[in-house]
Length: 213
Image (cartoon, rainbow, N blue to C red; front, side, top):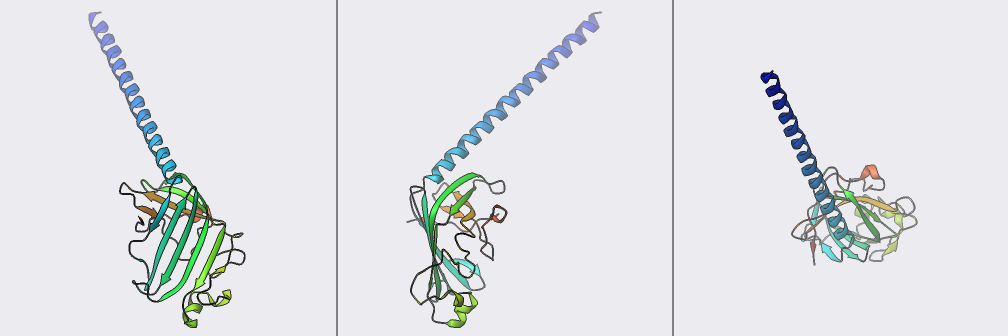
């Protein structure tokens, strides 16, 4: 009888310990998840409130001898991009300038990249400027059919041009954004066809960072 009582007492104690461990795990995990959600929301709020201009510290190499320099400006929920593409790292042989503007929204943490967030960049207007006199070069980049005059910016919002779709056909860029502890701002790597017009085309990796001016 004493043995049975001892065994019963042992199982009661064991059950109590296991129950406490489970509760401790639930509380700890729940607190960690809550803290993580709070951190994510703070970072989302910070990104949605960006103000200032961020540029590539050096021209970004896109491969095959093509380089570009980006200048992003954020103010009160709006954004602009001024992008110049050239055939050398010093941007002496410029081909075109692309400019766009609109509003933006940081949505949620990226499921693929730590500390990165999914973001939608609305493009209300799109502009392109031809910067080369080389017709063969302009043709290679699909610019000859856009009725461009050298050095004169053209609004391509309605018709589109080359790989840029019209605002109607592509009103939103589905992108990624990351702001690191040093204040450097990262964006998603664009696909070769430049198409980020749908959710399924959202990038899965990040470009080198831009820095605040």
